[in-house]
Image 1 (cartoon, helix red, strand yellow):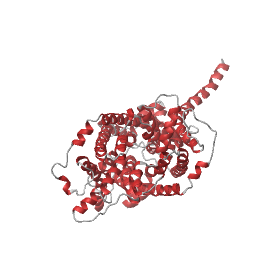
Image 2 (cartoon, rainbow, N blue to C red):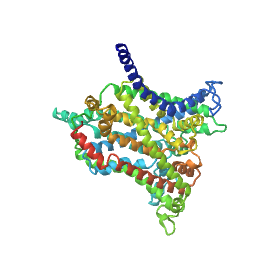
Image 3 (cartoon, helix red, strand yellow):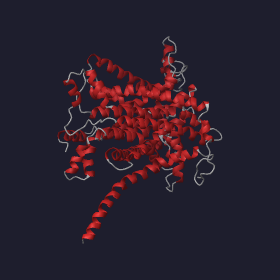
Image 4 (cartoon, rainbow, N blue to C red):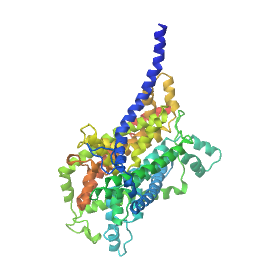
Length: 589
């Protein structure tokens, strides 16, 4: 008996170890299919002279010749433009997003509720729709702002088709990402450290500079990297604004390679690989900076939110927020509405365009009665909601394993999750197409493939959002529940998830908006039955059907607005969520 008991005692730790490693192994397998396989096919394409296709996967004919394109004048100029655009747009986005996040979460600025809406409303306007609208507003000759200035006796003063215009458009439409991530960080921040600084004589600006902002470092750095990479790989805005200005960025250069005749997909893949290396270096630097300090700000002692007194800056802060709202939302929507209502998008006078019979709702009637628009709307909603739900769950699971467990090799899950951020969406879409054509799952031509593609392409955004939130919650709360007999899963469900309800809802909302706005990845995956609204808008714009493109854009924004409202209503802002949050603050056990 003692021998049997000894064997049982010996096999128990082994079984426990196997079970402990099984879950990370499953996560590795899922991420490998979602992310590694498409990227591997792109890498293979860069080192071969033939494009990977079903039944044509071979390692013969390996060559480095494709990389000679990387060092040519065209890619060098495109890479430099991309870096300038990414850095400039990130600064613009962080300025507006971070500023509004601080004002609404931690200050006594006037009209705080309105400024919160001003921070997130531009998310309802996809960047390429904003670029389309600003093309209507700021064209050097026929731009509505310039035409209006001429009507009033002035001269043209706006030209959006240059490097500054490209940075401006990308910056204002990626600012909401910084707003959501940084606002969550400020909202969860325990003000005890700030009060301690005040007690020891620190002035408000010193407290802000030396306590508040350093504690928000994970969210600020995460937002900066997220926006930098998203903007340098943005294809539609670069195509609409930069293409008209003759400014090549890496995505537009890759797109031209892919669409040349014959297609130069192998060289495009080689150019894309250089981006992977750059972003991996940036991500590694971010992790190294974060690893040097602790950023825990939520503990079991409860929270008492505090606000900075802006004093005489309350009104200027409000005006800055209103100016951002005007540029990012009001003017573009008015331009789209004007074009949608007017008989022709090309006018010589704005003030004279309101004459009798010149405006009508006929274009709206045509769009609302179109089967194509109906089908695209349903497809977009189904894909976006499904991808956001699955993406949030997967991102939370992976970030929990990476940041809370001691599983060997857990850091690899984080690096794999961040990989799609380094791969241009246009190339990721191509890799996903090759991968799911070769895998033995009949999903090509279905909405399921769109969901899979969106989850894979947006994994970095979900992972960044979930990780920055988990880092702020003290793990002692969860460990205390386990020590008192709760299982780990029960502790996560009853302690960690309720505390993270607001940031996880923000992550869900972020993924939902990204899915609704996504255009580049589905360009390679859609079929007649799986067209999305973004595809319809881009096709119409590309074919010069400006009025229907404007009408569809407005309907598109309305759908996004409704989805966001529903998500907020039943998420962080629901009465049940507020009741749970108050309950946990009183009794975190």
